[in-house]
Image (cartoon, rainbow, N blue to C red):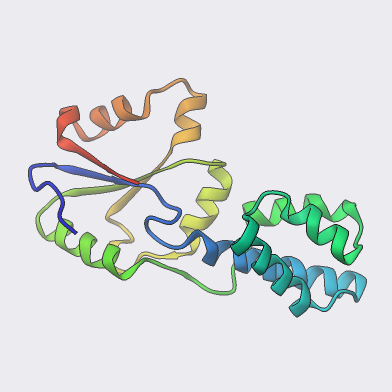
Length: 176
């Protein structure tokens, strides 16, 4: 992957750029299915996880809970728990950076470039993902920013990064 060498700051999105978002969602679904099986004794955790995985792969995230609820007949009251898990799940497994991202981070770091993440979406959910990423040697070298938080504070994310890194806008490379 070739990147403009003259840039000083490289800004990455989190989901499906640094790691597969699916890796996070499947662990959330596993935890939810485990909770439903423990609480209601039906459906078996494996059946619900497989249903949710197939739905995610074939139809996406939209209406996943509703379709699972209609298929397996568990109470709608669990929707709040399902949504809360997306924000504060304690994942059983770490999220791993794509191999090419690890190599790119090493190259950028060796060249003295700044690396940061500017991620879209619910800041609490995105922060939860960040906590479970295995950053390896980059754990103290990658700065994390939340676009929705900046937008809420009526701060232009690009201008914020220009000021934060004290560079001209032309020195920033966005990767999403």
